[in-house]
Image (tube, helix red, strand yellow):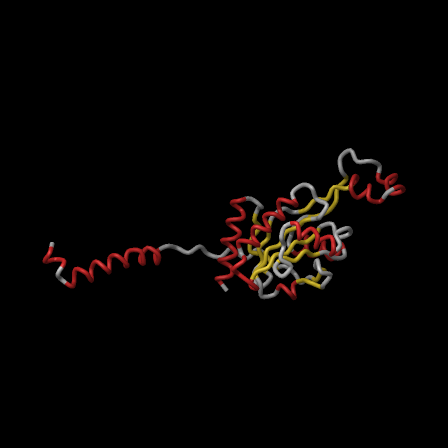
Length: 220
């Protein structure tokens, strides 16, 4: 053994094995492919929480994640926004290459000021996370036609008579008669406004989303 340790070739072989095996494993390990292109979001322009025009012109060249909420929502929206806040935290190192967008599906009531207050509850950084509203037709065009995500209002089961409510209090119609529905996935869009995936707001879905964000950014 002493004679073996004294031979230079032994140490060369030992170093080669020590560093070569991990390097070989890393080279042979397959890298996941970026998620496929599922469609393209058409150009849109809405209004952000600071009452500024905001849309695809500002998002061009960025990878971004969109979701759909409304501030009066007591169902899924708080959980969706909490998941977006987690994405904001986990993507903090990406800087200006990444953005978050939450679009209200109740634009008739969700003003920029109301959206700003809502975003503050979840620690939204206004430079990285935009909350958008606008005319109902423009919002529907962006959400339904663009993202291929459903939104709308349905009559709430057991609701009071709408005509009678209109005569007394419009808010009663909004709160008691109508039930707002919307998609609950987080949507990943790449630098070319191409949809790269719909991810459920679960722990597993969030992990897959964060991985997909990295793959899309690195593929560019």
